[in-house]
Image 1 (cartoon, rainbow, N blue to C red):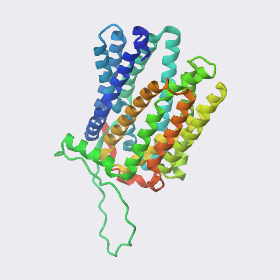
Image 2: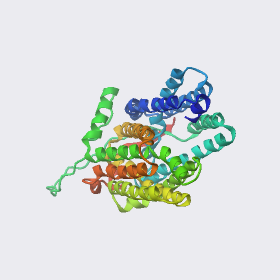
Image 3: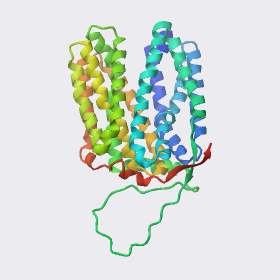
Image 4: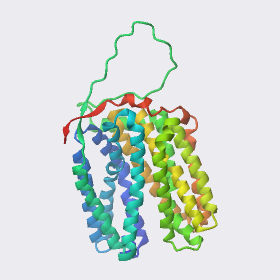
Length: 407
């Protein structure tokens, strides 16, 4: 929250606002995700969330440093409540409108879109803030949020219709004995099912499916240990004789590498199972973060940061593929939004932990700890990562298809 620091000089208030933005996601993720699963016409929820975010950020721009701190924190809480819908929520639309045979590439492009946003958004805000000040940079953020609303309203988003399951003809010969395959039950929403029951069932599903639980644990742990990077990379730039703003270039290199890695993920997922791709991504990221921690010069650190981003890039597409193969369509938005809320909270907690540890350990020691954390994150994937469903095999659970007219 550069705006708060620039206007008040109070770093504690800025930290409080980051926490206030993060905490609501833990509650909003399961609730809004379950609600999204039940909606046939999903556009209104996306539109309301986008409008609330834009208005909320505009209010923060006006009131930060001028109004009471508790009011700014309340606005941050409200903005945080929209985060699960406006991040993971969009990804839930992909398998509803894309043919199963094309989901691998669609997931790769979806993952790459986060990389594009991660590069372009901060770059635009930082460029304006560096020349015109933090309030002008925050105003750009408000403008980008407002621009999302007409784009959302103009985007094609068809209403969904339920298709009955295909009935198979009776088997006239004794079936061939096959080894048992553990699959989650396919639960379709019913009019009698309450929202609370749907939320409870979705949370149970996160525990019940071993592969889904492993991926959720791995990605949440990985995000906790990646959370320190925005804190540590400016410090690394200073240690290499550059101004702290050089950390922004390191983050940009990491994001650019992530974009390339995401685009390559479709090819990787055609050759290997998604759990193995995710485990490999975390392992390669750990190795390259070690290289980043020991680089002797700033140009070398830029190259290492970009390579680390490439290693991290396939992780999201692999994660989406696992979830599409492990989660029934009627619970997909809830599971995705819940997992996104876990990751957002973990990332913020990691950033806060790094801030507390910077006075106790050197930046290179902390980067080595971040690298070790990626190896720790891969541990839940080791027993079952190689047995996950291939991207083509997993599509049979999806029963919702786009139909009807645009809403």
